[in-house]
Length: 258
Ligand code: PEP
Image (cartoon, rainbow, N blue to C red):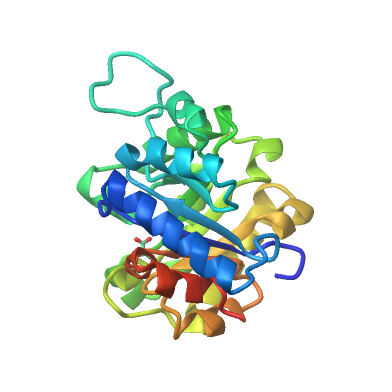
């Protein structure tokens, strides 16, 4: 992972209202500042609920924080009669660097399929927002030993029709569903197997140089106590952190895993 800047992204899910979000980002920034964190060595981002984004933007701009932020979803459409949805242009106006797309909780609770995930990836790139494309198998697939082929099929579908000049900026998060919020972290070898396969597939879909520049994250019960072993794997370039990102001190420890 030498030429790729690691990314530690907190997925807050549906937690922290806008007032709590301000306190959380301030605490994270202060904790990292006290530790002398170099943001160019490990990038830090939070993926917040839509209702938090304006407050986070105001804080980050006012205090010139190096913390990046983004949303957890976006509409595949740019505007129009889509009640309740939030568009890429709206997120761009709020200064979002990232947007999670295809998180397993969206796939499960909102029936998001690969075609919709693909449309959302394109909608993000259309606004120069970096998609954090979430992929990963459920327990049944893992038990059948099909985790690599299953996950690569998700990658293929999500990137269908996405040109190399956009795909070079994608972030892929490998999140085995059985490890999300369960406390059951994948072994470093399990994470490496699939993250390495994702990079291999990017080389096939595009080329080796592009694949070598894309950041592939692991997600699933990452904590300060297990992050270093996972980050030691050659094809793991960061983590998507759910539960543990809600505690600023714990998340700062994950960011400073080295
Ligand atoms: C996630 O929601 O992306 C996630 C990895 O959650 P957790 O860290 O809580 O398992």
